Amino acid sequence: MAGQIPDLNATVRTGTGKGAARQARRENLVPGVVYGGGTDPMPINVKFNELFKMLKAGRFLSTLFNLKIEGEEDVRVICRNVQRDVVKDLPVHLDLMRLHRTSRINLFIPVEFQNEEEAPGLKRGGVLTIVRPEVELKVTAGDIPEKLTVDLSGLDIGDTITISSITLPQGTRPMITDRDFVIANIAAPSGLRSSDDADAGEGEAEAEEATAEE
Image: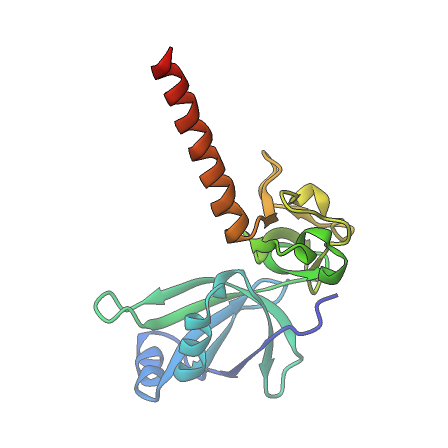
């Protein structure tokens, strides 16, 4: 289960329509609506500064939030749309969708690498190159994994970790299904790569000289 689902604080917006929305914006609030979940839509306001900070952090449209409204039960939501000012590119409205525990959604799940000290390739000076620090998965709202774990034990220089190398939590699957994409690899240290390149260059030069003598 996810350890930390971020809170999204909001207040109930009294009144609907363009007038109420304009008033909210004058008060540095962003109007929005919460819908779905078998209940009526609810007009809300979110503090502009808080929303703007979350948007700058990235992945806003694929992050599950715990919506907190005073006087209401907390509910899990995901944002389905953020309308922006066409000139200033600032948020002016958002749509949030309530989720049941059995709802299926797409989320980016972080990848954690363990047992680096047990990887022969890293002991020899190899470098862990992380291609995907997070992976987009289709998950169930009530059973979201906190992270994916990669065990580096026994991996050597040149070894590659792909999505098939990771045991995914039950009920989840990667959004990319047409290929076994790379998560990370253990690359040779730069000194060794330079030496190999030099050796290869010398070998090519010797071959060219031998050809010329013939």
